Length: 132
Image: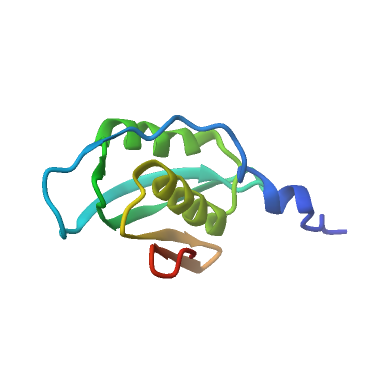
């Protein structure tokens, strides 16, 4: 009998403690920043197998920019974290918005194929909509 997905699987990693993303004051207005993590790794909470992919963050600062080393350490903390790919993307977006309070932000997770299927997850937040 196959093991069913549980609420614990679905919520795994969503509220886990992760390193703080630091910011610094932006000196300019109305420009976009793109940060790419080409070797992202997390763990499937059901199978405990590693998930590999690329995380792309695009955001328009509203006074604060992400400090890159702290963002890298934040993303690296997912290496041992059991969390679904969809939750990774939404969690990264939530934490970036909380840290930098940008005008708009989009996170794209492009995960490598497993079992013949690849996954691309996109989540967007903007001040106009106030949600993803």
